Length: 442
Image (cartoon, rainbow, N blue to C red; front, side, top):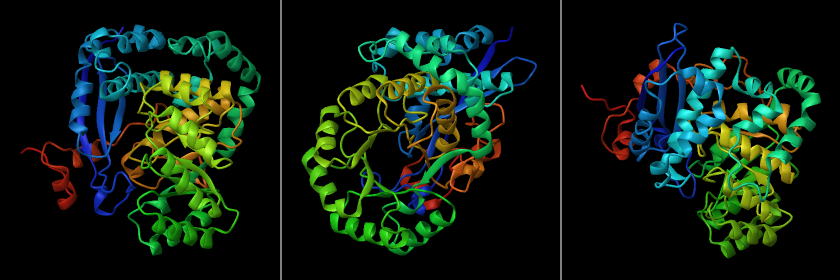
């Protein structure tokens, strides 16, 4: 038996606001950041668990503190019992009655739990010598159902229904795994569409996206309607009349405003409109979906937990589900979300980009293809070409598709040198943007 000897955290920030990478209608100057955690054990194999919570600068220190608060749940405990029953481990930490009072099951504390859960999955996958997607895809339907907390879900998805979904997909697993390794998973890119980019940069990056083989791009919208019309027109001129172009308002609009704004852009045939209003407004999303049909509504990167996804699906408020690898409480809760999407027949197109989100969420989509939905039709993973060089196993996108990773682990491990170079130990987000440099105490 081995024990967890440390849960180490660090505040990692990148000055992406200098180039306006990631800029949108609600977040004009993001500094991509990671509240990073390493789980260390005394095992002779030296395997560590790495994970993070993505933020955009200020407040990253708060997220780090939340992860630190979970140290007592793990340090000193034997590793093997935790890894052998990850369903029980998830339910134990999420079910801490005092921590639940801070949510329950939402917000900074819930995301912190997701970080430690993901780090434990990183250990488990590395010990198995498998990438996370493959580890999950080779578990039995019964084992996978055992990972899910069905509390609050059974009026939409029961354990028996989840088991049936997984058993139905089981016979084709080996063939789909081989297909995935051979051809990868479709991606789309947001790189041309950041709101702070000039028209010339938008056009250049759109042309590059086409040349790189992507079959969809996404534009940020919502700050100024005339600007959106102009930018969408330029994107259409580059991409052609039938190329899928999605739009993302990043929660900018009121419900009626969203319907009117999308109507003004309807001539450009948006593939979907993403986060048109508050991510917590299920009924507002449903009203927007009815008001803009047949244009689809996509939401989920800020959905706080599986219950929000359940209600969005029950209300027919979304036609595209966008899970995020680090917004909910880790792998276990995202398995619940994938099962919900399969039950309701809604495609999952995850949110990615940021720092490390592409590396993390690809495993969930690939698992979904192999063991849950059994299809890639209408599904794709967001891709943004930022900061991949900082990861031990960077995302590999070729011809517009994600190459299936084969390295053991959950894909979230950042290079030690990158963590050291971008360690933040105080000061303001404005200072980070102004200097473009790290700040650490001497």
